[in-house]
Length: 204
Image 1 (cartoon, one colour):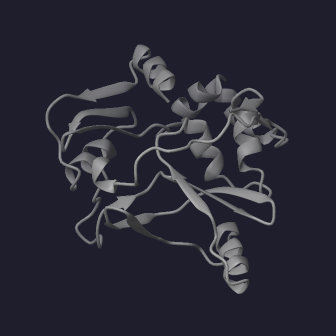
Image 2 (cartoon, one colour):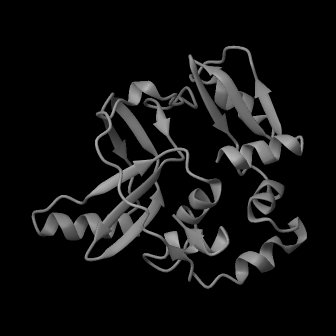
């Protein structure tokens, strides 16, 4: 993601916000007024970024194609990218959602929502990557909205019917093309292969 942001900054497509900005209404309001990437340097004491793919031009830049070739390029997808196993993360620290800037977007929202976290899940050997709006309820828990009939929901139903829990992991701050692939309707279990294809053939 950092390389992508720097590339877009060189193209004049990043707006840096140096002044302190609040995660409650203010930052979402700032981001809604532009299609540039917005880089907050003091977002309630954190750094944060919004609008990574807020325009067709940004998506074309991430893909490395001309904007006029965007639709044909995406339409030619074969979902055959290679996902490389680069090992697993181990150790680390317990989850603490208070350490990241989570937005409250609108006065009617019930709380702060993670809106661009990728939810990875696995069931019967099939891996899924998807986007779900997740409301933070405390420093270690979220409530996610699962659309009935979509893949994560059906995987959860399968696991619960067996008396099992569905294993999930949530990532924030991935390359924008991985996020794009996760929120695109593709054949079941092909999100990461699609992301790999979009990124040139391999994803690690």
